[in-house]
Length: 466
Image 1 (spheres, rainbow, N blue to C red):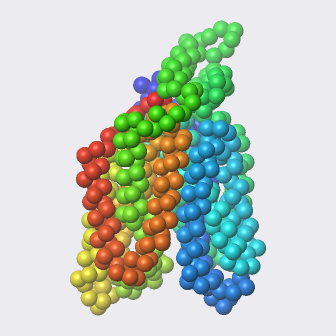
Image 2 (image 1 turned 90 degrees about the horizontal axis):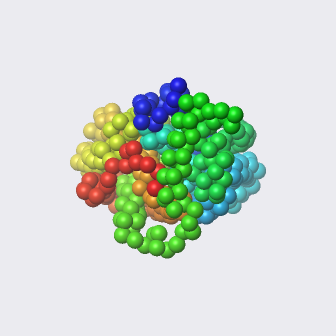
Image 3 (image 1 turned 30 degrees about the horizontal axis):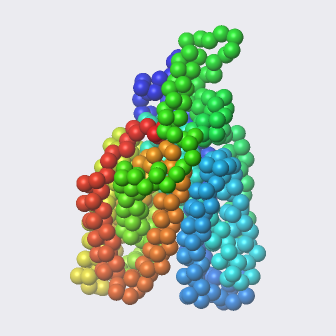
């Protein structure tokens, strides 16, 4: 059987896509682990601030805010470090290095004597998270066929969300010292699992290692490598396919040095403008901070159902939304899912703001289902586009020559906005109030919907060799 990209149907069950799917699911073990580390915090904070704390003294409110937000500064650091290393050391080496800060994080949690251990651990966890958001989207995009690239790239946030729920459940129901003992084994399993994966063919071609690039290409496309003592028709088709791929990659100038002109030209400036707008909307719409403070929002809405239970339900709705995104992104396209998600999230947040603004405490208490329904809707619709697709579209929009460095710049910007949003959202919720916070977030969604609706191109099926 001769594999042809044009003949492939967009099904992840095709034999051609087998190793692409396996490799994607394998590398996202670390994404899952990052989610576990993030989800561990919320249920642990009351314990760390109590008299039963394992630390020398209970942590204060100010220390709590730093423990929560230092992961953002760590992510910014990870974005920069791994963005600089990605084209120097390669995707595979960087993927191995990503596990080290995360393992150190869990060791520090176990041995923590005071809050400085937690500061250091959260910062290191952020380095892994920041690196994950730079290295893995590029790795997955480079090994994937166009037909399933959107689905595979969208899996990242699904793994994060599942990890968040696992971390939340582990720290809620298991002993403080048991959780790090379990969690530290995950990055070890990750390192073992990725041992057999090949470097991406694009990186190998960039470094002039053409024969290794061909083996890598055939590995991820599940093709037969041509024999030297005689070629079959299938072998000949494989040779032609790789030759076309190689020509497309090299025509993008990937072996040339990156210069300032590659960044400061009108098409590239427009691409960065669109990427920065998507990042602004991703964070200031509340898509991340909103779900970090879900319990606080339910308390503000006077929900009689236990706040932590509501948080788990909203998390489940988010996972369902992410599953829909993975299923639809290569059928419907990135643009329409993003715009639908942005419009829906804006309307949902506006409804929550109006509910808090206009309804009495008695009405809210008597109608628990309404606030839970609205929060689940926002969780689902945000997960349909705003949350996962930014990691797809940012990579697809950037030119091949500057894709690694450009992705690093974009993810560093995302981390900076993440730090800001984590800092200002609790101040807004407990200061001006929940309605003002929701109106602001809905306004950001509205601005993003209009501008991206006018300017954002569809990247579904785009060749990543240019």
